Amino acid sequence: MSEKLIEVVDTAGVVRLTISRPKALNALNSAVLGELETVLTELEARNDLRGVLITGAGEKSFVAGADIAEMRDKTPEEARAFARQALRTIKRLETLPVPVVALVNGFCLGGGCELALACDWAVASDNAVFGQPEVLLGVIPGFGGTQRLPRRVGPAMALDLVTTGRKIDANEALRIGLVNRVMPQAELEGYVEELSKQLAGNGPEAVRNAKQAVHDGMDQDLDSALALETSLFALGFAGGEQKEGMSAFLEKRKPNF
Ligand code: CAA
Image 1 (cartoon, rainbow, N blue to C red):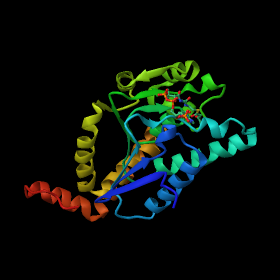
Image 2 (cartoon, rainbow, N blue to C red; image 1 turned 90 degrees about the vertical axis):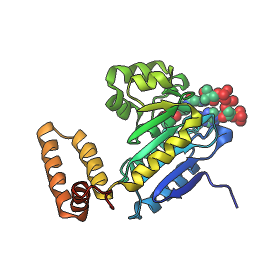
Image 3 (cartoon, rainbow, N blue to C red; image 1 turned 180 degrees about the vertical axis):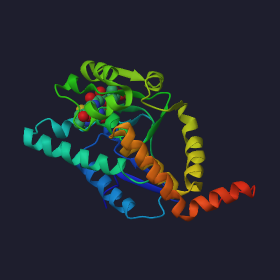
Image 4 (spheres, protein in one colour; image 1 turned 135 degrees about the vertical axis):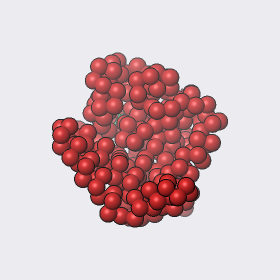
């Protein structure tokens, strides 16, 4: 049996996905993307899902980009199909109705950075290296980098990175808002444990609605986005979570969602 390219570990509904092609620094080829999409299809069907964490196998790399060997001889049409496969898969990761967190454990370049950008937030080990080095290969980012990067770090910083191809370290990534936290690699596991407990314990409906409000609101004008927030806030009072959460507070006990 061939080895899995995406390892899946489930801890009480918090699923850790590990992209596992360490010999190529976990570069994304069509086989990895295909397997990731299959896993995401399974996750989408689950109603006990509480969170998804995505990382790369080994201590050296998260994902070192799209697979350059696979891309080299592609025609424009084949390149378009490859980009569409990646964009579709990444979008499905982004729109899971639970928090999706990138655990960036090393090189996070090109398509790897684009994958991390589709996550709700990212945590990096202090040896992580980020960049969109596509221009150094004679192309532009094709897995969403020209669009999601400026939305996360602003157009000037995105243009700096995308047009020079320069690499930045974890601390610069933190300063520009590309990642939320930086920690020594040895501490990532502890963070994962703590985060998994948090995600498993929160009310899934409220978390889903909060994610939807932020994501959908970002594409709307402020008044429409605030109206969306009001609708989702009110909707929260229709389910059991709000009664339980507020009762638990008033009764000085932990909520049981
Ligand atoms: N695609 C295919 N193979 C890759 C790869 C990639 N993106 N990145 C690394 N590898 C392979 C290397 O070819 C090498 O394979 P061999 O052992 O068979 O020679 C193996 O992984 C280890 O890599 P290195 O020997 O280069 O390791 P290093 O420590 O010297 O350097 C690195 C690490 C700086 C990350 C370097 O590998 C590198 O620059 N990689 C390419 C990064 C890049 O340009 N990414 C963007 C790709 S284009 C893209 O992603 C387009 C898009 O938006 C869709």
